[in-house]
Length: 243
Ligand code: MF3
Ligand code: CO
Image (cartoon, rainbow, N blue to C red):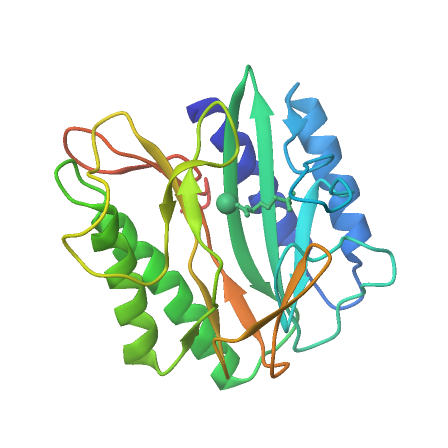
């Protein structure tokens, strides 16, 4: 799990450095595939199957502005000044999965978008603090919901984090809303992907094929870490080497 998730962090670090107006999601996807291949790993999202949707075509998800998650890495998706892009990366190596996401800015963004990004990231940091043996999944959910409320932001409906290990999505579901003291108990050795998704204008989401959008077209941010529960401090497996 450490190895797979470290590759996720490596990809995010490098793609983050590439973000600027004029770059396309397709170019980012190509670079991600090169890095993953160089690590003798595979892209976990490419070919992923869910419900009755066609298998996912891309190695990364690239979700721009009002796209919440699972955006397509197409050639015509070219960043403009003031855009934000959520990049989500999944890696499999030696039968273990890594999953992580960050939202990056292209050029200069408005103050309200800055506020959105800062508080979505803050929710993730606070949530990771709750990742201690003896706490419950609801403690994570509650702190994410509270962070959105305090910031005047909206948690995207329906979308959640998840357990992760020998498959990409495992129990438990890690909701971004909930009550502290409820839900499954966290135990040493568990690995979970925590992924707050906050919107500027509404909680309501619209789904088209794989892609989730905000219903009002307002921008959305997404940050995700895979975290290991230990006997003591949580271990962030997707931590950036820049930090
Ligand atoms: N990190 C995303 C999630 O946990 C991955 C989506 S799977 C994809 O939902 F195939 F759609 F990319
Ligand atoms: Co995930």
